[in-house]
Length: 119
Image (cartoon, rainbow, N blue to C red):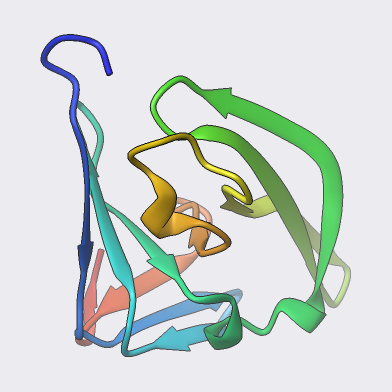
């Protein structure tokens, strides 16, 4: 970590739902809330709580110096493809292991609610 930059991961029991184009694609009562310096909180959901069978893996990857390499998935609903709308750290770096394999959605591209309140 750089001086002053922190990443903290908190297990939660709040109910998180994710909708894309009005369709529910994920719901969890066991999300992880990731708080990172300078960024809004992100919600990571266990794979089992995401309709991952509806998503297609992409070849796109990014690297975060604080979490590691992220993999992305796309979702096609009707005639619309939401390219790389969800990501996961399959092998995060030390300190971020709690999010291994969990999935997080872009809040500006999906509707995310926590206990019924929009994120």
